[in-house]
Length: 590
Image (cartoon, rainbow, N blue to C red; front, side, top):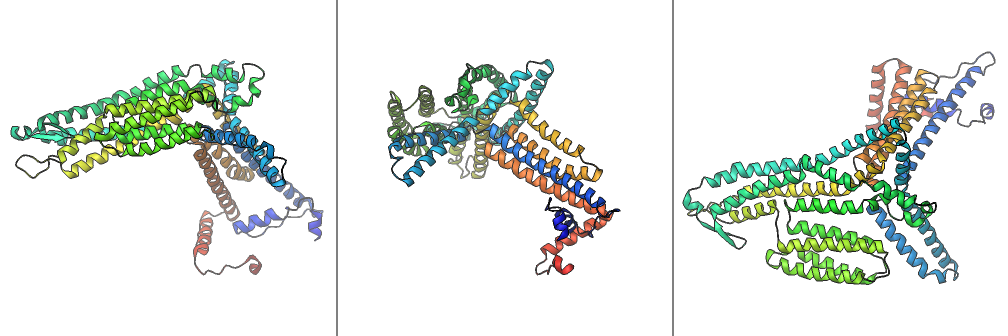
């Protein structure tokens, strides 16, 4: 009791030694006493306090750093649109129930709770723009000096290479499959069919209501096979993507000026809450995004443009439309619901009734456009966004009516027709069912992988290009340098080698690792939620490994034998996993 009272200024003073020794399975070592019996103990307590302080400081910096970095990054994309939609709903609801706020306590509670939630959402919406403001200011400062300007350029170049490599991997997967399909068709099916005798090649075959000789179908199949490879190389090869990047860079050339116009036009602009409602980088890049999106989808249609693809385009556009529609715009919501039902019919339509359903959809789209005209529920900017989406939907539907199939669609259609036919005077199918399945499977993979690559280029990749133009690379790298500096300082302040090793393993490595994985996820274009989970889980794993490594190191220092450390850990693991093993408590050991 006297010892406890003597150390009541630090109630944890007894714990670190006890916990550490139990963890490493070593004999308890009590501090050597000096002449007055307390000198050595005081020194040990001082060291413990420093270690405890260093660990607490590092943990605090790590937590604050992660929270701060995530908050500054802010929500954007679909997450921001959902927040904005919910914010609009709360605004209208609060306005409608304003006269009820003084009625009774439950009503008051609900009313003011909604107002509080609305304020929190407004702050979250605003936080999406902190990144743009931070990057814009940092870029302005860095560009004032030749040396720091080079740092900004190098940082952007470094991140650009990483995001380009990420996108290239997506397209490389498609390129391999395109080459596989065209090679199989050229050197196997087309080559074998071309060797058939003249009488067999002269036989008439009907495919999708069109009758031609087998020889003519072979020539058409050969043409579309060549077109598949040509269209891919022309639109999605490395050279084609570089040309698109040059165009993208030019279109995004004035993005910094647009951010400056929005937030720094005058002294009041930075304080206007309306300026924070949408992500400024996305807004500033909207026109460039619309132009490039159409370029990419037009290129994709040359490869695949079947009903399913058109259905997915329209469905995506409708989802984007619904995110902007006001909760109290019942007329538009009802029309959209009807369009969704017609779209499901369109998805399963055949070539014969495809045009009829497309016409019905176009009439519904026109009705939707009429419902927006003169609608005072929307701002001019929102009307412009909704009108653009409707225009995109109409373009997709008109394409489906004209039915310009892509190269893959034409290839599979011909192969299905040849599979349904037999050679003259034979029961053998012109294209075997096994071959058709193989080709269809490969074509399906091309469609699926190309869709993913195009969505990445149109989505996260485009936004990352816009952010790099603003100057995000330099600030992302600086945010990584900060925890490295903190970790280095934490190690430098330790008094001896053992403490420095322990600080490196338990503090510095997890700290740097968490920030590094967050930045890595950012440049790899992970979504916000995915990147947050990725960095936190990775940080937790690195921290666990670091503490375990520190425990093993202390065991090694205590025993002086690596073999004994391994044996002790093995025995401990076996004891933990052996069923029915009676564990001896620490009290019984004593």
